[in-house]
Image (cartoon, rainbow, N blue to C red; front, side):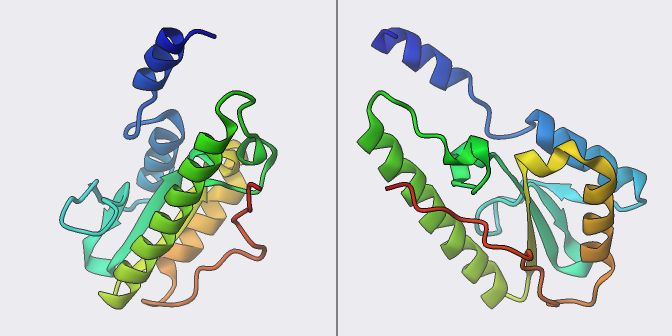
Length: 149
């Protein structure tokens, strides 16, 4: 693939209003919750913000944020070192953002792109998160990051 083609493809990648994010927004709305979008005054500009509950939801792309699923574990064949470094930086930034939000009294839930494929399970998990008391642990049952080396 030529450099110009790669650049065109990368420019087309959206960071907001993605299909997984729109699905989560629709699901949360059906559950009866109202939210704000992409609050720039909060670390990481969370995708969904529930101000009264001091809770936020991030809808992360598996590849871009280094999830441990098949799609997230994939590393491009060309320019491999660049991508390994880039994804590692994204993962470090994500950890830093969650720590900043927690320190400010917010609770965060990360929903991975691959998790949006099973809507009933996603609905239960999201409802549990939104109905739980403030600052209750929301860590998933298994580790969600992966080393890419």
